Length: 164
Image 1 (cartoon, rainbow, N blue to C red):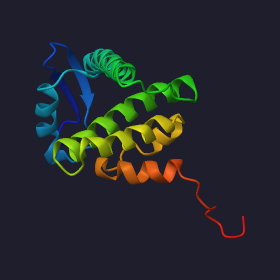
Image 2: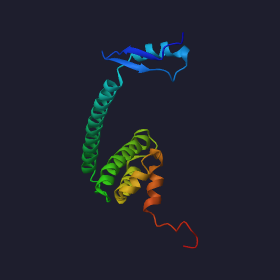
Image 3: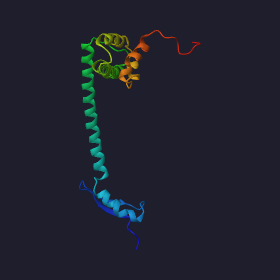
Image 4: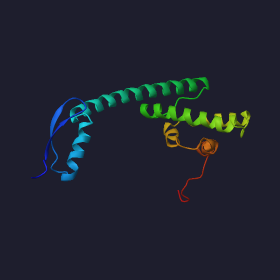
C-alpha cells in the first residue's frame, strides 16, 4: 500500500486545508504535515505578514520623523547651514550629519582627545560642507576620522589625476 500523498491539515489558525505532499519523500510527509499544522495557513500567514509590514512601515516612518526632528533641532541649535541637494537627499543627509558630528564630538571631545577650542575648528569645517551627497557618502565613517575628512573636503586639493 503506497504512502498517502494528500494530507488534510488543520492549521493553527483554525483553517482546514487539503495539501498535496507528493513532492516530498514518503518518509518525510507525516513530519511535514505536523509542521504545517503548527502554523497558520498560507492565506492567514500572508495577511499577518502584510499587517506586520504595514506596522513596520509605520514604525519606521515614526522613527525617521523623530530622527529628522532631532537633527533639525540640533542644526538650528548649532546654527548649521541648510544642506544642498534633492529633498530626499537633504532629509537623509541631515540625519547623517547629525549622527556623524555628534558621534565625533563624543569620541574626540568628551573622551578627551581634543579640547573644545580645537573642536570649534571642526565645527567650522562642518558648516562649510553643505553638499548633502558628501554627508551621505561619509555616513559610515569612523567619527574619529571626521576632522581629516572635513579637511579633505574643504581644502583646495590638486586633482586626483596628474594630467587633469
